[in-house]
Amino acid sequence: QVQLVESGGGLVQAGGSLRLSCAASGRTFSSYAMGWFRQVPGKEREFVAAISRTGGSTVYKDSVKGRFTISRDNAKNTVYLQMNSLKPEDTAVYYCTAGSRVWVAVSASAYDYWGAGTLVSVSS
Image 1 (cartoon, helix red, strand yellow):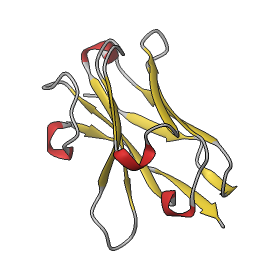
Image 2 (image 1 turned 45 degrees about the vertical axis):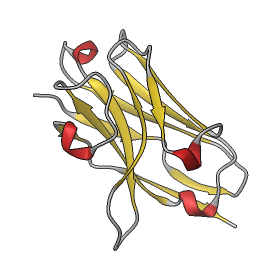
Image 3 (image 1 turned 120 degrees about the vertical axis):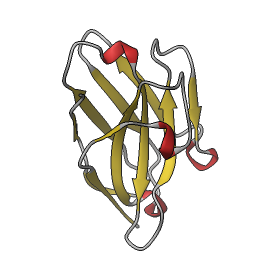
Image 4 (image 1 turned 90 degrees about the vertical axis):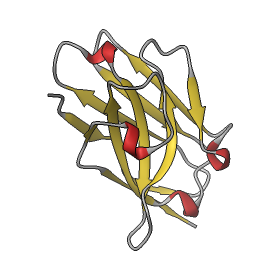
């Protein structure tokens, strides 16, 4: 069982930056691929970024490439999402997720555990 707790969300102006963190419980963090998804009320949850167990492979949603960076620190059981050049359309609740069945994945169904989410609001 893995528990995930996100932090770092908030209100920022367009063009600004935020860094989200996700702290995971347990001693097997390095066994999990990690991902970030986001959801706007009334819309489906969408993939944002994912990172492999060792951090050697990363995947991004096209609209965030070059602006967002996912990273992980296996010694601290933490995954990060650095978000730069934020746009109003990035406004959403951001969820951290962990999956033991895949190396890295973009599908929500590939992941096993989810955090409660953290709200990111970008004003124009």
